Image 1 (spheres, rainbow, N blue to C red):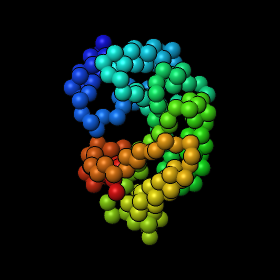
Image 2 (cartoon, rainbow, N blue to C red):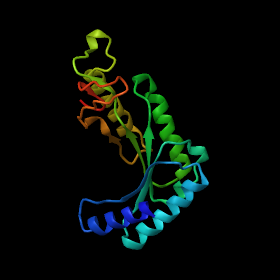
Image 3 (cartoon, rainbow, N blue to C red):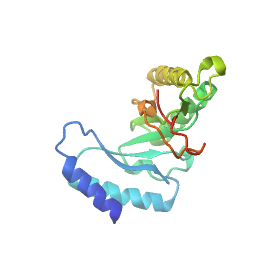
Length: 178
């Protein structure tokens, strides 16, 4: 009920904004479960009763086990992998999702790389802002060239600090920032 109420409130508040292209029903939904399907059915029904814009979900599960993509107009795929050597796998995952959802738009999402202020490529590169920039450049190049993707989202430009990171209180840690 809370999710339905929040979705209804968001659509009623924002539906007249020209920048709203579609409504997101869930981020990283359990798209492989019956419960996830039931949830998306309910949310899609609410959204479509209030506005005629397309609806999408963001998923991170296995495409071959999906139970929800047929209920929405587009699928945003959360890609996990932060090394240039993983790029081929990310492209293959996106292509596998496209086979499942058919002609619907698919949008790969890359959440970003961890960065430590002061880390540099000359010291091995891990957690450096240069490493982020190189990966982001490769991500853009590969997915711009990939015919299966309708676009892409890269969240690496969110520049904030997290004092409660996995390294403990480290105010210099930027989880996603170049």
